[in-house]
Image (cartoon, rainbow, N blue to C red; front, side, top):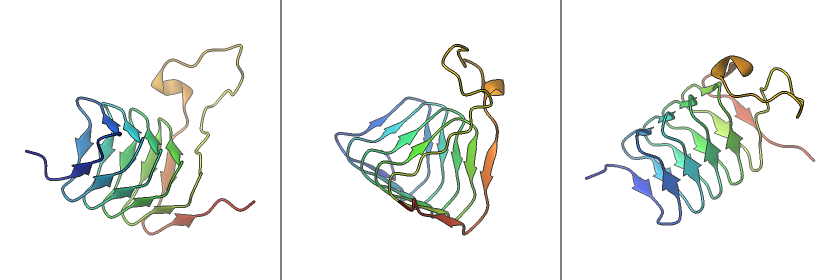
Length: 117
């Protein structure tokens, strides 16, 4: 029995760590090597890659992508449609297949980020 909620349309791959009280909503995908803290809320269509760490009490709004290397400390808010682009060499010609191809992105406790259009 789990102590967190995953909507029936969301995917949480085997091996993902999800903290107690967290909620993962419609059409989201959490990969198997991701770690999500306690009492987090993931809105609709959120993607969480392998080797992403999310602290406790984080709120991730709709359409946010957390790619490999992203670390969110506790109480971080990510506004709608945010995308972390932390690939070191962003060109199509050179495939990126290892963790060393991604920069670590640390978002400190209580930070909030909104996409401004």
